[in-house]
Length: 42
Image 1 (tube, rainbow, N blue to C red):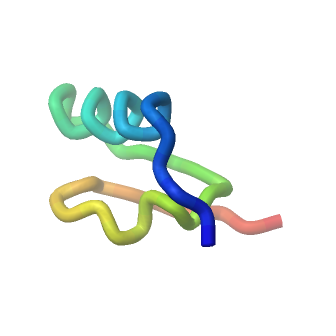
Image 2 (image 1 turned 30 degrees about the horizontal axis):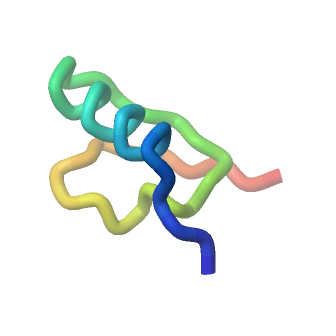
């Protein structure tokens, strides 16, 4: 299992604060409550 690092927390917090949609290849963000997220897998 992958764990959050400080950078990951900043990415999620910034997206939420700015109210923007986050697009990621990392499923790590999928359980963040309130985060507008799309996960695109290769």
